[in-house]
Length: 331
Image (cartoon, rainbow, N blue to C red; front, side):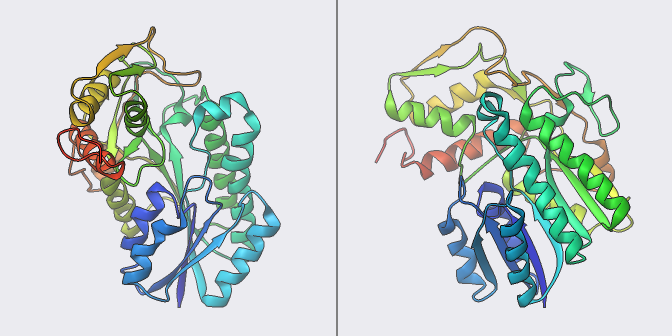
C-alpha cells in the first residue's frame, strides 16, 4: 500500500489537500505540531476514508521525533511521496525572533529530507512562497529571476529550504516540486488579513483599524484553486527534477483597501475604516508584487477565480466560520 506523508497536514492548506489525496488508493500520514492546525480538521476526511487517515502530533524540527514518525508510516506501507506544508506562517513573529523561522520553516525541511533519504523516498512537494523573491517593486516575478533577496526571515528560510532541496535532488531526490504560493485565502482560516479584519470587527463593531494606507496590492488565490494546481503539476509528466513554479491568478491582485471594504460590507456594514500611514503593514511585508504565471499556463492550468472573486468568496466562508450570518449579524 502506498503512503503519502503530509507534513503540516492539519493546517489550512493541508485539510483542503487531504480530501483530494484520499480519493486515491493510498494511506495518508499527517504530521503536525498543531501550532495552527487542529486535529478536528481531519475529521471529515476520516469519515469518508475510514482507516486510511493517520495522525501524529510531532515537532518536525526535532529529527528524532520525525524519524519515529517516518518509521510508523513505513509500518503502514511504502512511503512514495512527502508533502511539506509545515512552516511558521506568522511573518511578524519571525521578524521579532529569527529562531522561529529557523526552527519551524528551515529545520522542518532539514529533518524531513534526512528522513526521506533514510527511507529512500524520492518525491517531494514543497510549499514555498512569493516571499523568497524579496521586494522587486513592479517587476513581474518569474521563476528564473535573480538575485533572490528576501526581506523577511520567513522568506529567507523558505529560500534556504529550496537550496537544501536542490542539494538533495543531486543526492537522492527524483522529483522536487517547489510550489511558490501567493497569498492563499479560504477556509478554515487560521491566519491572514481577512481573518484578522473579521476578528478586529468582533472586538470593535464600529471601527476597523488597518495597518498601512491600504494601497498594498497582491495576488490572491483561493485554496481550492491552489490544491487543484498542485495536483495538476503532480500528475504532469517529464518535469525537470527540480521544478520551481509560481502558483497564482492571472491578474495583478487587489489592494488591502479593497479587502477592508469587502470585509466590512459582509460583516459590519456600518463600521468606519481607519487606515494607517505608509504602504507597508509590518517589517518584512512586500507592499506590492506581480507574479508571472506563464510557466503554470504553459503547464496547462488556469484558476477558476481571479483575485477579487477569491477574496470575496473567502470572506463569506470565513465570516460564516466565525459565526456571522449573511447581512452582518453575529450569532
